[in-house]
Every structure is written in C-alpha cells, then in structure tokens.
Amino acid sequence: MKSRTLRTTCMGCIAVLLAGCLTACGDSDDPGNSRQQIGIDIPRADSDFWKAYAKYIQQEINDQQLSVLPPTHSDGDEATFTANVRSMAARHPKSIVMAPQNTMTTDTTLSELFRANIHAISVDTEPEHGTVYMVVRTDNRSYGSKACEFLGKQLGGKGKVAELQGALTSINGYERSEGFAACMKRNFPGIQVIALPTDWKGDVASAKLQSTLAANPDLNGIYMQAGGVFLQPTLALLRQKGLLKPAGQSGHIAIVSNDGIPAELDAIRKGEIDATVSQPADLYAKYALYYAKAAAEGKSFQTGPTDHGSTIVSLPNGLEDQLPAPLVTKDNVDDKSLWANHVTG
Image 1 (cartoon, rainbow, N blue to C red):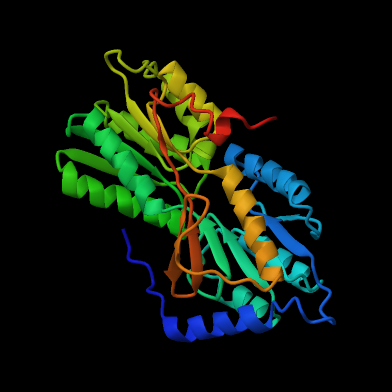
Image 2 (image 1 turned 90 degrees about the vertical axis):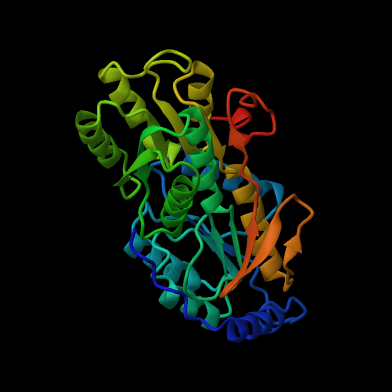
C-alpha cells in the first residue's frame, strides 16, 4: 500500500486558530449576527448506509428543530461536492455538515469556509487538510482489525482472503486497509490477503472478485469494507457460482463486512455472511447536527470521554468525536440497540 501524504499543518497554530474561531466566529451574543441556518451535503446515494443516513438527517432536523438550508447531494463526485459547499457558503450559514469522499484534497474548500467564519462538521470521513470544527466518525482502523481478528479465528489462521477495499484516496478506505493488513501480518501470517481496490464500486468489486475466485479456487474468506455497496454483488456472484454455502456447512466462505445495514444483519441470520461492523448511521446524523448547532451557538469542546459513550480526540486540524462501532455476529444480531434493527423504510 502506498504511503499517504503526511499532514503538515502545525497543530499548535491550528489549535490557536480554531479556538479563536470558536470564540469570535460563533459568538451568539452578537445582536447583528442572525445567521442560524445549517448547510448539509449528503455524500452518496449508492449505498443503503448513506440512504439510511439521509433519512436520519431529516429525522434529526425535525427532532432538534433546526433551521437548515435545502440539503444538497454530491453523489460521490468531488467536483459536485466542492460546488455544493461553495453554493451553500454563499448563503452564509453558520455551519455546514459534509462528508468529503476524497479526504486528501479538502484544503482549499475548508480554508474558504474558515475565512468566511463558517464551521465545517465532517461525517464519517476525516479531512486531512483544512480546519474542521468537529469530525463525527468511528475508529476506522479498528474496522479492519476487528474484521481481521474475526476472520483469522474463523479460518484457524490459514487460507486465502479477498479484501474488497474502498477508495484508497479516502481515509476510510486507507485506514480500514491499513488496520486489516497490520493485524493479518502480526497475528495471522499463515493467511494470504489478496487486496482488491474498488473505489467503493460494487460492479468493480464483483468483477475483481470473480477473477480472484477463478485464480484461487481455494479462497476461504472475504472482507468487504462496505456492505452497502459490496454485499449484494458479492452474494449474487457466490450464488451464481454455487459457492454461497451457509455458515457451518463444508465449503462455506467466511465473510466479514462493514456498515451494519439491515441487509447485512439479515445475511448474518441466514448464515450467508458471518459478521459485520455496525457503523452508526443514526448517531452520525444525530451528532453531526448536534455539533453543527453547537458551532452556530459558539460552543467549544474538549478532548476526552463524552456523555454519549464516545471519546473526543485531537486532530492536527480540529477535533474528532469517535463513536462506538460494535462487531455484529449471530450472537448479537438481534440486539435492539443496533440501528439497523429499528430503521424504517
């Protein structure tokens, strides 16, 4: 895996700038400052996870009684994302909720927002350049390591695993891949990992997996970094080739996923896949808008445990609220606390 560009932002300088902005730019005591709107960009619509997130966003807008600009949709396209953010910024909201998909090219966009005294809240993705008020996500390296630990034990430390990676220009794809690779190298050297970059595209994942199966008929494990886009193409391919054996049956290919969407939980119940890491779509929406409102009100936050079971950590360019993301298996798939067990259509 290629090394990513190291962040060069001075932590001390950013901390001073961020603190100054939180004090001066979000001063709700200023009688001439009547901007209360929040801008929202929905990053994708090609995944059940992001479709659920969009529904939770609307629910939270109503529950928190927020004043928001009409949400925009960037559909995973970097140019559209930049245009959407600039269009919202021109309407002078106090904060914008976003999820940039290419996290290495955010400096210009976020710098423009900073100069305009608009707070940036990033959901799920961690911008690597440019100031953010708060990032709301989970520890994505732990996604990879949790998948590795589960698969490694399922396979008894031996075999071949196909890894359907996301986009490595995305910090999520990179960190999940990094966590998985490091864990496999350290704990399960007897397992061969076949890394398959997909750019988060289900058709690409299916085509590469088909080629991998042809060249490796003894493949006995699959790690999907995003069940929302990879689950159905993967299951369809395995079913077509007569390889979709239920868990516990001879010839079963052990599968671990990420996202925690309803379809993944159903697949666990059927024995089609073995586990997933539940990424909290509901909490992403809730706390993204919570922090967007807090930014508009001039509030600031410190590192450490929160009152909602997470931990705020320091970044070189802001803060990050790391929400919990549990591993889901047949043992806890019906847990009512999992968002996919109570999401509505």
